[in-house]
Every structure is written in structure tokens, then in C-alpha cells.
Length: 214
Image (cartoon, rainbow, N blue to C red; front, side):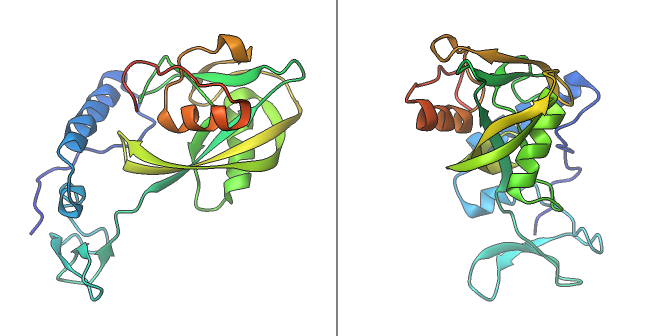
């Protein structure tokens, strides 16, 4: 039976910066102890349908799941999908944003965000670029994918898209504190592993790690 008491709400957009940092630190500590499928379900306590305490047991395929013994609801702990945008201006400079919120607040990253359920990955990339940088764009191609760690959702599947600017005015917005173009030979340390994976795929340039890997 899974009964972890009160769960910590790990929404990314947090009004209280100190609470946001505490949530991120909690999940960093949690992830260090993640070695099995059972570990990944340890913070899943209650059924989101009926509120009953979830039980960790095998489903009909023999896979461990958090299952509600009352209504039969099955909680699947899947990677959260995200979209990241690689975009160069006419001078060949890379578009980056300085993050306003945790995780990695104050560090530079590609414009990016979690994929909304009502948008395709390409639509989400276009929306994130507009929200975080003020620029309109269109997808040229998919760079690839990166499966890695998220301090909020434990696992994330990031899709990288190369985009072309079609309009707009460069202006930081949403959860970006700044938006700026950088020469490829003068990139700042990049916040996330996924973004450091996509950049060399398009440029051949290895991006510097910002602090410890994430």
C-alpha cells in the first residue's frame, strides 16, 4: 500500500520562489533514491478519481502500477513530454532565454515548455517561442529527442525543434526573465541536459554545463 501522507505539489509555476526551490530540492533528493519502478511510485498516494489510498501491485501485464482497489483506476507514471526550440537569427546567433522560475532560475536555456494536451508538439513549440520570446516562428524540422531527469516530474521526454523566425518583436515573457541572441562561440552555460544535447546536433558546438548536470 502506498501511503506517503501529504504529497508536495510540484507545479512548475510557483508564486513563492522559496517554496519553488523547496519543491525542486525535495525532488532532487527523491531522485537520488530512485532505482526501481517501485521507487518511482513512492509519492503516488491517493486515487485521483475516488480519493482511496492507492496500492502498488502488478497489472494484468505483470508491470508494477499504482492501482486503486476501490474503483480500479490505474496511475501510469510516464515521462512528461516537453518541446525545446532551436532558433538562429540572420547573424547566426542562437536564441536563449534566462529562466525566471525554478528549476534552474537565473540560468540560460533554449525556449521550451511542457507539451499541452490540446496541442501537437509542433504547435506547442510555436506557442512557447511566442510566449517566452515574443517572436513568431514556424517549425523547419525535428532535431530529435532526449529522455532525462526532471526535478518536478521525475522523468521528461524532450523533443527538439529547429524553428525559423517569421515575425514578432524580441521581448521576454511568461517564465522567461530575459530573451537574447548569443553568438555560437560565446554561449553562456546552458541549464538543461536536453538543451545541451540539441545544440551540438544542429551546430557541432558543445554547450557548457551550468553548474551540476540536470
